[in-house]
Amino acid sequence: MKRVYVDEKWCLGCHLCEYYCAFANSGKSSMIKALKDRKINPRIQIEGDNHISFAVSCRHCTDPICVKSCIAGALSIQAGVVRIDRDKCVGCHTCVLVCPYGAIMPADEGVMQKCELCIENAGGKPACVQGCPNKAVIYEKRA
Image (tube, rainbow, N blue to C red; front, side, top):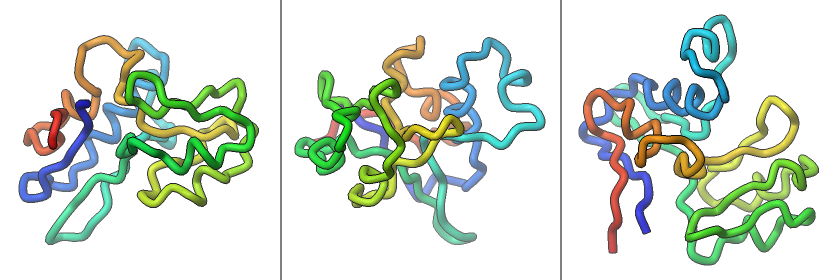
């Protein structure tokens, strides 16, 4: 299965992937309307310092502990992608606590959010990959 990876040697730490992610998941047709004068809430986070930057996002584990731990049954695996049913999520943060990658976070509405590889967004590739000017964010299958 394809996943999102970041090549740390090419990542500039510009955070554009975060903006593209937030826009793609905003439901708005204009990036300006979606992001201007608002705190963005991306599903990928760039961490690091001046020497190295790396992305924190869902690894879509083959045996995800977050899915097993969800008390509401809101997390599931669909075609290899760990998904959150926002209607079932009760906002208990159990998935946040058990995720070893820190990839699940609260959304503005109180439920949880995480990278779902933009499977509901058009384009064939996750928005963070499409928006990376340095091609540091990669969407590929690895062994």
